[in-house]
Length: 98
Image: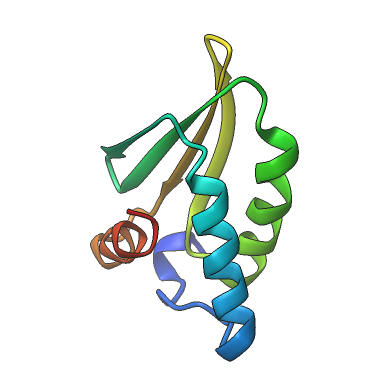
């Protein structure tokens, strides 16, 4: 099943969803920039933020497999890209992460 065939939904509920939302909010405060990209949003962090981001990315992949979450390095920055090939997924990502 491709990402476009997966339902646009999160398997977390209640306190677990609240905790995850809070964790992302806290981490994303450290982004030096955020821009819209095709299908979603991209964040740039100064230096190496992999140790902070990777655990959240791994957890998110388990509860929201319809999202594509990529971590890369560009010009000394850590770049986090979150996207979906589905327009509904893109809207959900922008709602959750903007």
